[in-house]
Amino acid sequence: MKEEQAHKAVRERYGKIAKTKTESCGCGCCGGSSSSEEIGYSKGELASVPQGADLNLGCGNPVALASLKEGETVVDLGSGGGLDCFLAARKVGAKGKVIGIDMTADMLERARANCKKGGYKNVEFRLGEIENMPVADNTADIIISNCVINLSPDKERVFQEAFRVLKPKGRIMISDMVLLKDLPEKVKTSVLAYVGCVAGADKKDEYLGKIKQAGFGQVDVVAENHLPETMLSEPDIKAFVEEQKLTKQEIAEISDAVVSIKVSAIKP
Picture (cartoon, one colour):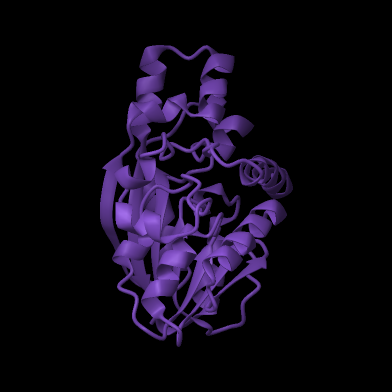
């Protein structure tokens, strides 16, 4: 899928999500109302943010593993409704800063409304693509991202940009989806499967290789989890399954191929 086509599909899909209150994304991590707890968020964390900030768009809780310190600057790639930004804001405190980046205008509008509702003074949201971040060089102490980089058609560029934006000794903590084996061709070429966070995912080794090629060191997979077969009941993926008339065996093969990982790395 060409970059322009990919961005258009993602904007349309996530713009639609931003305009609703209950619709989840199509990715394998997004189940029902309890899915955020299932992927690592506590009830207390979810209760601490404005209603509407949690859109069930993640595949992990990067903030929980980021070891944020007071006064740090955090950049969140694909900030959505603002959930991870608001959780990070509490950890970095008034002397810290959180910058959320999202390329979907409707999602940005929602995040800013949530920010105002929650009275966050140390959070701002910027419109932009993660391949070309609207952030100056050597700004961030840490970059977080939650099930977003897999949607980028140019992941090499994303990690290069992350390297640029981080201060020396800065770090990344990313939750994302990767593949353990190739997907069938009809899955790879499906727009529905792409915006559902499946078709755009890289093989695990390729994904980690791109982080290293960008210049990062100490690249470490902190956790890895198979996603449940129920991932394929999500709206976009379900539509794809029905469209392609996939068998139970084909569904199981796709489910076995996709895992969520949490990756950390450091800029030397």
